[in-house]
Amino acid sequence: MKQVALLMDEDAIRRALMRIAHEIVERNHGVHNVSLVGIRRRGVPLAERIAANLALIENETLQVGILDIGLYRDDLAHRPFAPVNQTSIKSAMIDKRVVVLVDDVLYTGRTVRAALDALSDFGRPKAIQLAVLIDRGHRELPIRADYVGKNVPTARSERIHVEMQEIDGVDRVYVEKVPMVEGEE
Ligand SMILES: O=P(O)(O)OC[C@H]1O[C@H](OP(=O)(O)OP(=O)(O)O)[C@H](O)[C@@H]1O
Ligand SMILES: O=c1cc[nH]c(=O)[nH]1
Image (tube, rainbow, N blue to C red):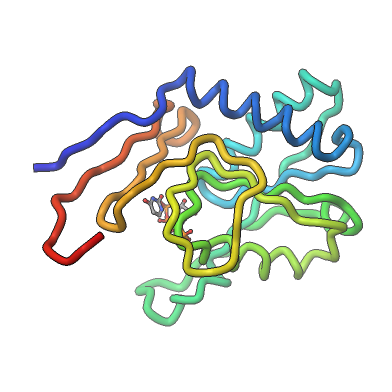
């Protein structure tokens, strides 16, 4: 049977996203030169919520870019369907700016690797920073997050599920515990 444990509820997600917004302001001395880019799918509503928090803190409205990394995945050849590119980014949001990439879960780092590759098509940012709601460890590439909602030590056999009101009708994060197989971490 599927075993699940709640990691974050609506309030915990809201607080984490407000803290991340404050950290972005502090690290970048404001948000004047900052752009937000959400990785589809759930990175997009997360980036929009961080943008709303930044508007409250700094009184500046940031547009949110949408990055679809489908075409840049390193396992493209093993996927059954060709992806449709749903990226929506203007070069002016990238060139010479500090770009904060936003995603829901950081795991192996392969999605972020693909996102860095995809972003380079739009210009040359001054810097790229990474914000994630959950860092679950098990990196396979030298990638780290600058802003983390919650660090969650996990076994590889587990899966983190992030659900967002805008997509799933509810705000919550839970871990699906899969019974360990002998010899696994
Ligand atoms: O660091 P990584 O190993 O790349 O894992 C993290 C990514 O995995 C998830 O996407 P997934 O491809 O599972 O699709 P989903 O968004 O439909 O869950 C999640 O949304 C992250 O983008
Ligand atoms: O646990 C995981 C791993 C990758 N992507 C997710 O969304 N959850």
